[in-house]
Amino acid sequence: MTYKALITGVGLLAASLFACAQQRLPLYPNGVPNAKEAENLERHEPNAVVDSLAFDISEPSLGLYLAPEDHATGTAVIICPGGGYHTLLTKREGSDVARAFNKRGVTAIVLHYRLPNDRIMIDRSIGPLQDLQQAIKTVRERAPEWHIDPHRIGVMGFSAGGHLAATAGTHHADTYIDNPAGTSLRPDFMLLVNPVISFMDAVGHTGSRTNLLGNQPSDRQLFNFSNELHVDSLTPPTFLVHSGADEVVSVENSLYFYRGLRQHHIAAAMHIYAKGEHGFLTAPSFDEWFGRCIYWMDQLGLK
Image 1: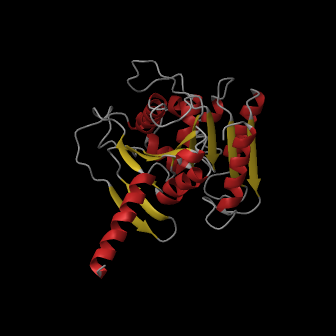
Image 2 (image 1 turned 60 degrees about the horizontal axis):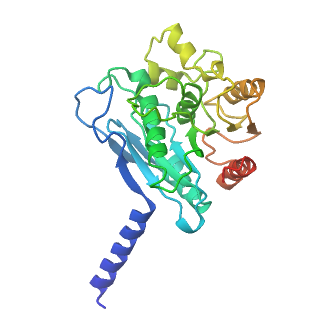
Image 3 (image 1 turned 90 degrees about the vertical axis):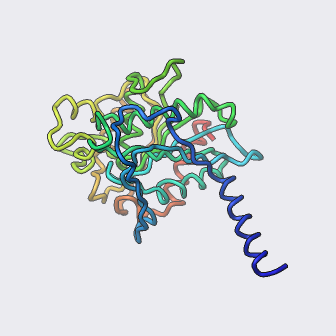
């Protein structure tokens, strides 16, 4: 075999393996709702700290990572990367986590949701939530095809992605997409990693709030998107993990949400680490916090 043939064969094998690991699907095959006519300016940039960043997403999509058939559990997790509603950490809080779930027999779907922008949206405040609701609807309706149990579909969110996931979990009765079949938009469980929960001044993350709602949000908007105020008996079981030393998103966000879950007798777990910056860049290790997440899923029979 020539060197050129060997390199070509290796390249084809790598491409084949990647194709098996991920499929990229348009979220709205028939047109994006709540959209203005605008040029697609999506771009991806390398980043020394978090590996990869995506900006200006106007055409949302799903990255599908199917669990290996020989040990698939039937559970699926839709992952919402963080980035303050300004960017998406598509690798560290996306594809890397998806592959870790696959090793555990869990199908993972990375949601590349639209980033709020008046240039591309009629109503910027609901764009990301529309995309997550559409993702839940899509996964539930295609569950038989993807060998997923339609009653074991969860959402996972990091930072602002945690706010998005929590919004879907606390506002699942409010439908912002076309849903003629009445498919349930309620996640079956939530995994929230150093999440933004509140938009109230005392604990809220100002950057995420401004990017989603603009510079002068109304009192109604602040109330509506402060998810600790909307926990009820139908809120899904929730796993929370945060660092008490987080200087970007206060740990109070997780504490307030957990308190609401407790008050409504929702199955929940929370882990607070004494050390570790926002995003857990140095501590705790991925295996440490992700292992606790998997343990909680095991306890609830989700894995």
